[in-house]
Picture 1 (cartoon, rainbow, N blue to C red):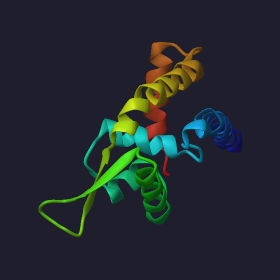
Picture 2 (picture 1 turned 90 degrees about the vertical axis):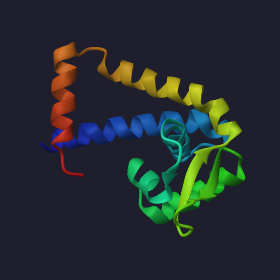
Picture 3 (picture 1 turned 135 degrees about the horizontal axis):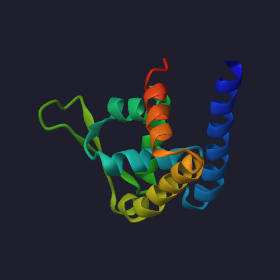
Picture 4 (picture 1 turned 45 degrees about the vertical axis):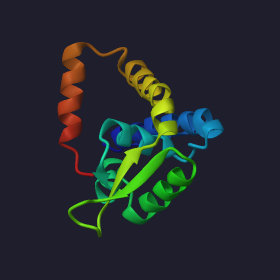
Length: 133
């Protein structure tokens, strides 16, 4: 079983290393590109929802969002019904780079799954959803 977990870890590190190098020029290293993708795909998430979506602790996520707001990729708005809550939206710069980021995510997915049949892909997805993380 350790082999399986190590393989998942190796895949993750490989994608992280490649994506960080690729998007560093945009100021989206350290997996910051994931935040932009998630917010573009689901604008108006609460900050806590975004942290959960990228599977990172909330303090780190909030710091990263603050940096992405300053860089012009995201914007924050107070929730109209609860002023204590803040929602995250893509800024113009985030919307401009989203197609490149999304294409990279699609490429990685297609590359990783290229040797699997449709049935194997479905089986893998089902098995991964059963993991506790």
